[in-house]
Image (cartoon, helix red, strand yellow):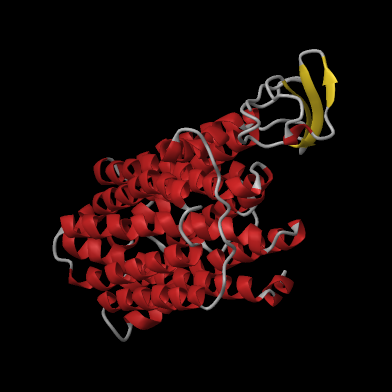
Length: 434
């Protein structure tokens, strides 16, 4: 897996990802404690709303960023977004009102919505071989998991020496280090993609790609299952730790660290785990119930990782190279649309009805989404498909090697929705346009 680190460009980009993740992890702990200081036992509602704003920025900004990603040098875009995120992180320690959290979170996440899909679309171009890209995905997932353990542990150590506000300085340092690493390498130039309809058509293409590709529809359903479970972690943990168990600030880092500790599970385990969380939520605080919460958090983290790790391969398989920025932007936007649903739902339910009801509702959503993904994912899903072009004219470059049949031109190749393929073949035929 580490062999891909011999590629200098990927090595620098991966290191940039790691240091930015560590900074973001520190901010997660600090933001939870900041919300608790400002809102007390209403912190879940504050975090739920703040995270909903984050998701709204992701959903709205990512498609627009994907639409212009082939017009702006990637290094320039990524560095500008890192510097923007660093500036917002520096401002967070001075927040005293809930609305200020909301404003800063929007600008922080708008920058992330432009940075992350660009980063994701760059990796398969830096590592074009399927084996190398798969290793890079595993390494990236490992970085996320280790960050989930390392950042909370680092936060625990730092909180014994400094106040949580200083953790935001670590976040700023992470983003600045990421920007420096991106500057240090030359990135592939984006390939301009011409589509009729201008920027609006480009922004909409990614969503149409997901809607038209069966395996991508199933992947989106799994994203909803992950979001339903993850919302419990990121919205409710601070109240569970501080109010239900009456444990110190450092215990928050321990609970969030447990989320990243698991490594073996599947999305089908999420509903059962959330049912256990509901039971633990009504149990009186004790050593065994605290241990149960940590184990449940670890299992949810493992199950989410099992869904998210192969997602990049599914997207890469489902889009042509020029369309990768639009595909990753769409996945970023649509998957976070799932979080936009579950974050405020978790926050408002936890504040109004408590953890048991919250876990039950979100567990039901996770179960329904998992079953939907099972139904939608094709039982037989080859990469190459026979199909017929009914509208392309003879001599069109795309028809090289195709044979003439009644009603069009038939051939077989790696199939993806693009400017020549507008629908998924249900039999031997699909319509295309010039």
